[in-house]
Length: 79
Image 1 (spheres, rainbow, N blue to C red):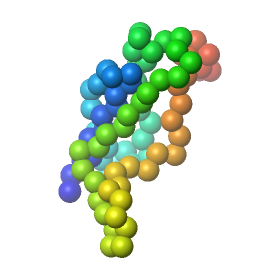
Image 2 (image 1 turned 90 degrees about the vertical axis):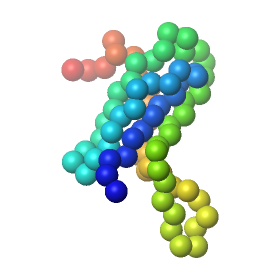
Image 3 (image 1 turned 45 degrees about the vertical axis):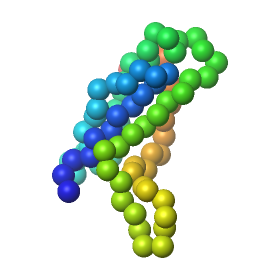
Image 4 (image 1 turned 120 degrees about the horizontal axis):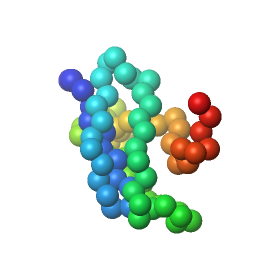
């Protein structure tokens, strides 16, 4: 069916879509934290995909399995 497009919205700011293909199924995407989110005790993050699938007997619309999501201060990241 072609690539899947993932759009991330952080505190209401929609970021450019990322593309998931058969070549990058084990992906890691990094997004800049909007200035309006920095220093807040909690933030709202939404992940949206451009299509979903369903399995027989399962009424959920499934889009993407996420193993880990984290907010990281770049200054704290080891290189």
